[in-house]
Image (tube, rainbow, N blue to C red; front, side):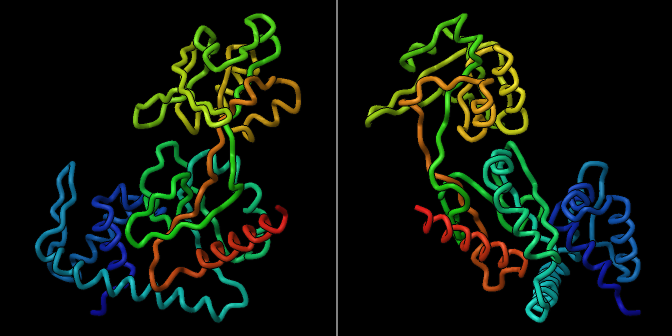
Length: 306
């Protein structure tokens, strides 16, 4: 009896993910459907591929032998199917990007609408996380990061604004009541709204002016997780709870409306813009290649405007 390739695909995904729930999350399926597919594959093959407990799903020796041969073959099948995109009028398929939450606010809005208009057959999935570590988590094709520290076989190209700044601001009412700092050290007695990374680190606020750099350890009544909870800190600052120090463009709408007043502007720290990271494979999926070309085109446009 010929083996259903969909069953083999399920076996590969479960093996790669190390469990049914994780494989379901990555593939957008559900754990029970994957479990049933693996069970049927084992029945057709007449051999157990996974040892299952309530906590773990581990390949058997036979399962490992199968995956060693099957994984390259499945990758080749996927590559062959993706190669068909060159015969399409426009590329199609799914493009999954792993990005920091800040990129969904400061980088992607200027790119995504036009990209999707130009490539209507591409489905773009954005995985926005506060804890940005593995670019290829959740089966993502590429990712956006703020550090150009490349791992082996990785390529990085600029994406979005090349220079960004942190901005310090507070509500006019707070500043009228508590005073306006004239130097970063003046922040020490103020109520400051801070962020904590998923790693647990709560960084000091860093400033720079005319080559002088300094770091200020601030304190205050509110700490939020960097990423998803930052909007709460912005709203708290608008409400007069304290001083916030965040991406300038994140605060710009509130500053322009007069809800926040900028402070310490000569000291605002500048930093380089983000990068699009992807694996330097021989065959890049057509949707990702379209996005790479689109980003490069946007970079050229930005350069001509300088």
